Length: 247
Image (cartoon, rainbow, N blue to C red; front, side, top):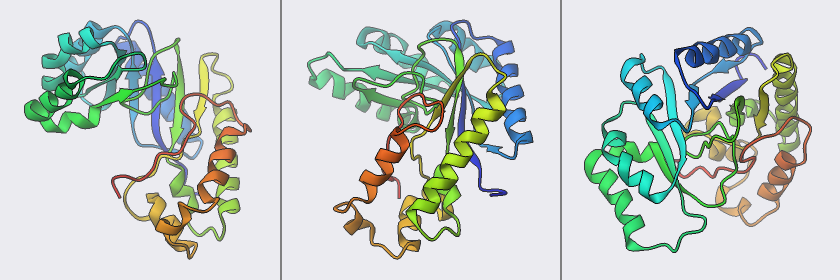
């Protein structure tokens, strides 16, 4: 599977972010690289809002940053800083809120101020903790999590089962590489596609000779969803299907 083992996100969660935190992420990324994985993004998530924005102003921009889950009032408080920041994400937890026009206006305000920041913001409902995928990533405890881009593993496979087998093998390799690290939280087994080539879920479906519009009414996605939740690795985070809206 040379060249196919792509990690979309390696995320360190810490209560006290610092330059040492960024150095730690880089060290972990190198360990995965030595194990044959390509790490696309290195990320840092912390509830320490001021420290994250401070790091954003001083860092080189190669590490993606997030303050994780915020409530309504705190979201309003940081909005100006968020829109002007180089590389900070957050999510607004609406699990127990009565949704109103004010919540919608937050998104329209972001669009008007800096539309590109919509990729760094999301609303969440009963959100899973410790997922390495931004902007839904939310701090629960110190540690780090890994998120694959598993569609890349589908190159040249002839069946869904063969692809899922490659995924299981990649999860096991990550678990083995990170086993010495006491704060390793696990792998978010989510299917996180991109929009082009072997990274595309629609492309994979087409290569199997199937029609994407038709498989949504078959057991194709049910089979995948059952697999990524059944275990076989140290799992953490969302562990679900991310549908290819950008495709």
